Length: 125
Image (cartoon, rainbow, N blue to C red; front, side, top):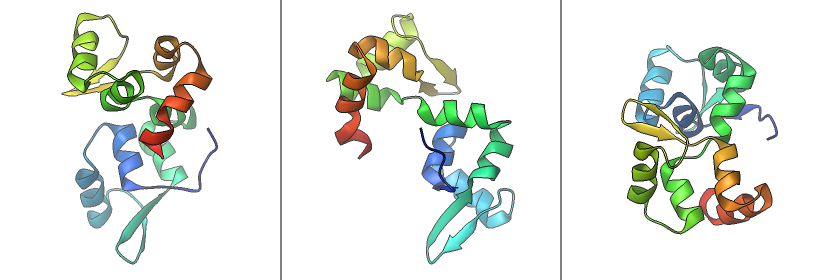
């Protein structure tokens, strides 16, 4: 994954496992450093690194999959993926109510990184 100069509030929220609105609130109150361009916020990459405790951790967090993304790639329902996560059939980490599936687990389930990337084209744009 190439290192961007800035993150969107949605990307940072995904990495921190909080809602995008929480990140926007932190930006408004100054708890998170960011820049505003009209109505849009952008968070410097370095701020994401600071919040996650290191560049490797930020890259890993951004590379992971949500249950919804994995479900779309596998063509099953998100609830099916969450059930697999709860029962241990799929490896993942839970933070509160939110699940995160490691990139490598998606690669395993789809049978290769190229297949996972192809399946995610329509999901991640």
